[in-house]
Amino acid sequence: MSSLALTHARFQLIETVRMPMALVGSAFFPAASMIFFVVPFLGSNPEWATTATASMVTFVVMSSNLFQYGIGVAEDRAQPWDPYARTLPVGAAPRFLGRILAGLALMTLSLIPVIVIAAVLTEATVTPGQFLAALGVTVVSAVPFTLMGLAIGYSLPTKAAVVLAQVLFLPLAFGGGLMTGPGNAPGFIETIAPYLPTGAAVRLMWAAVGDFAVQPASVAALVAWTVAFAGVAGWAYRRDEGRRFS
Image 1 (cartoon, rainbow, N blue to C red):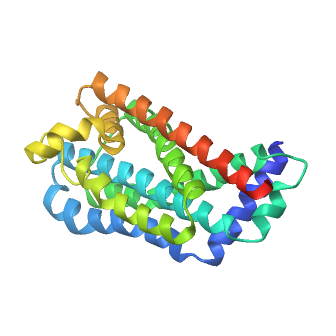
Image 2: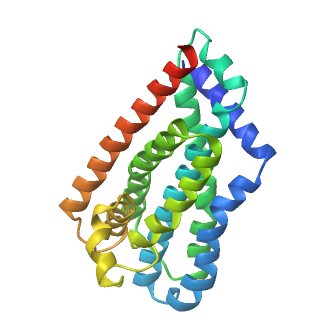
């Protein structure tokens, strides 16, 4: 199964390379935010620069997975190759795993500009232990956003998936407090942010790289969102399978 999954991942990556604008788009906004807002206003303060970088990393995790899976899956479903691939005797697991591997690779590529800008142009700093903790949080927080994207991609046709992904994009970013530092968001945002998937994820990231305390409510919220998105994604996939082969 591993070789089949890698083959599917390579196929997905080749398709993306043929349209590199998708990759550029997912990396542009957080990198531009780093250059125009973090570097000139927060870059000279190690604590603020570090938490701002953590916020932008979470932003990349959210946006890359939301668009990669939400729109990408919906587009694939509209192509003749998708129903043919579903008839192959290998089952769905290699395709799912291959898509996940390709998504992780693209997310990593989108993260590189943010990390480089933070390292070269700001005073952001982390210890080796904090870096490893942040890496673990990045992987963990990618799971609910991957499932969210899959739920959208398997539930909706392409045009509707594009609209929903775009509608969710900024509210999740601003509502989760990704555009501000810990405790600096407006009161309403501070109230709801810990319970949104973006807010819960970024609070884990802040805790990984700084002195921000882990909030049990946010951890519980992230687990709840993960379970909910997994349920919707599984239901949407089964419904799509039923429609194609009924």
